[in-house]
Image 1: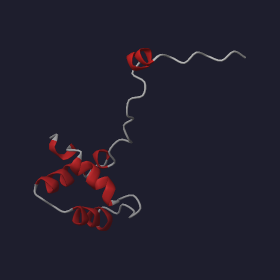
Image 2: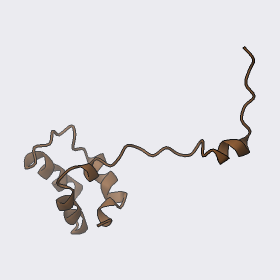
Image 3: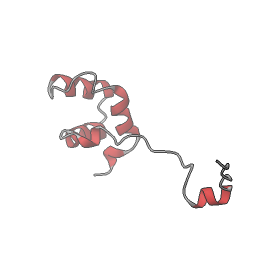
Image 4: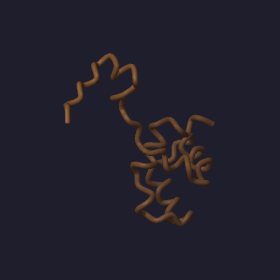
Length: 82
């Protein structure tokens, strides 16, 4: 089987290849409590308090509600979209 010639860099870039891949969709943007969480973030609520509320009151499993997911939402500016 003949070896393929590698694509030149200009072609590669023109096809949009090699760009940074975006991570998974923001988990917090997909839950029904998003509006409440967004309001709390705009009012300065801590990640820990939001996490505890989602676990204790909304009954999400602790493994699903981690600080990283909340901070991704907070620092990604998603709560500022509305």
